Amino acid sequence: MHRARQSQISRSFTCAPMASAGADEAAAAAAAVPRAAISHVIFDMDGLLLDTEGFYTEVQEKILARYGKVFDWSLKAKMMGKKAAESARIFVDECGLDGLLTPEQFLEERESMLQALFPSCTKLPGVLRLIHHLHANGIPMAVATGSHKRHFALKTQNHQEMFSLMHHVVMGDDPEVKAGKPSPDVFLAAMRRFEGDVEPSKCLVFEDAPSGVAAAKNAGMFAVMIPDPRLDVSYHKGADQVLSSLLDFKPSEWGLLPFKE
Image (cartoon, rainbow, N blue to C red; front, side, top):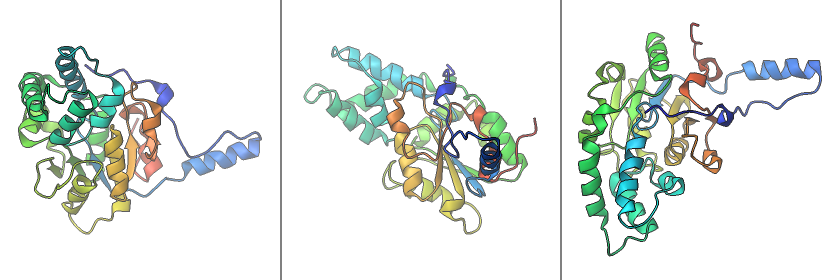
């Protein structure tokens, strides 16, 4: 269920095309300057490390079809990255289901359908290469996810090796996470659990959801966005960099050692 990524959405904000040869050299030199000196990396999980977002879409489409309604990407964008209770409220309100379906009923039905799907989720392109590279070069990594413990266990049961390379994981039902994304709670909690005194400006967050990018920026961190190609480009704003896949990520742009090709 890997999502096809469109290279067209990959873009860089470092420099614009120059006319002269001298200007070309200057632009190349500017592009070689890292955007920031990163020491720690924090990953979102759903839709970024693991291809689970398609499951949510599939289940929510089925639920809405019963009411003669269509689940579209403008609604999905509002729900992505949020805590379950908040995304359920958005679902019911935006779809005009008041009196027909409560947020609690929606979550109960969605839960039973998702539990059968989560264990089959796969890793997204470029994930293992990046994680192994960072681990080999001593860059501490963490996962900051809105998923609760029971869902996390189902999603990761076939990916234990990858998650064992993380310094720690912060989940949506962690006591320190008082509010879901776009609140910075989950990313700040992840930062505090690294060893030593880590500054937000030294942390690079990888996200696929607009609310997750906003949460990273609200935490004072840098954000690389890997959006689904079906997400409207208007939702890309706020990210420091937007790429079509983790395969397009260049560590040297963030002061990290480059991949060994």
